[in-house]
Image 1 (spheres, rainbow, N blue to C red):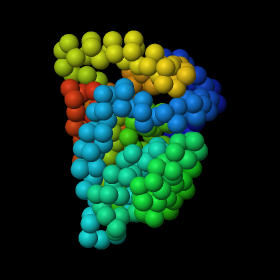
Image 2 (spheres, rainbow, N blue to C red; image 1 turned 90 degrees about the vertical axis):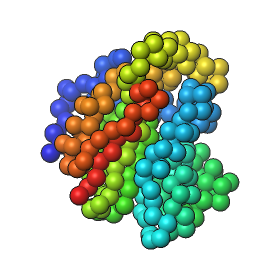
Image 3 (cartoon, rainbow, N blue to C red; image 1 turned 45 degrees about the horizontal axis):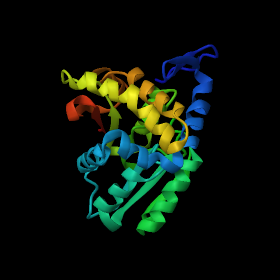
Image 4 (cartoon, rainbow, N blue to C red; image 1 turned 135 degrees about the vertical axis):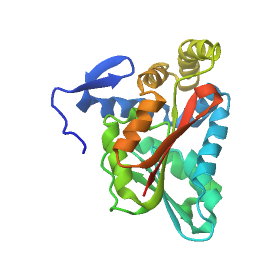
Length: 255
C-alpha cells in the first residue's frame, strides 16, 4: 500500500532537501530548460552509449510482431524509447508516450512525424504517479532515466503495476552505482567536472545538469530499488548492470 503524503515531508532535489510538494515543479523547470537539446546532451554526456542501453532495454521487452501490443513509455517525452518499441513491434504495436512536461512531448511529436511513426504513437501529458488509464490496459511499461525524477517513486511503481495486464512486463533503465574500480573515479570526475559545463555551452544553463548528476547519486542502489519493485507487487524482480554499473535495467512481471 502507498503511504499518504505528510504536509511536512521532505525529499531531495539533487543534493538539496526540499518540500515533497515542491519537487515536481522544480523538476519540470529543469526539463523545460533543456527540452530542445535533451537528446543532443544525452549523446554528449554518455558518448552515445545511451543509444546502446536503450537498444538493450527494447530487446528485453520484445514486443510481439504477431498480435496487438499496447505499450506505455513513461517520462519518454522526446520519443527515443518509444520509436524503438514501435519499430521493433511493427504495425501491431501501439505506444503511448507519457510525460509530465509538455515541452518534451512537443519535441517527441515533431520527431515522430518526421519518422512517419505518428500513427503508432500517442503523446499524453500526465503524471507517472496518477496515470490516466484503466486497470490492466498495457502489455508493457518502460521508463528510461525518469524514475529518479519522480517525487514519490512508490506511487509510480504502484501505478505501473495497476495499468499492466497479467503477464505484462515493467522495465526501467536508470543510472546506477559503478562497480568497477578506477571507472568509478573517472565517472565521478566526468559527471561533476565536465557535464555541467557542457550543458551550459549547449543549452545556455549548466544548473539543470548539475541537478541531474546529483540526482543520480541520491537514487537508491540497485538492490534497494529491486526491493521497491517487488514491494509494488511485481514478481521476479531483477536487474542487469551495463557498462560497469553506470546504468542498470530493472525488470518485474505482473503475474
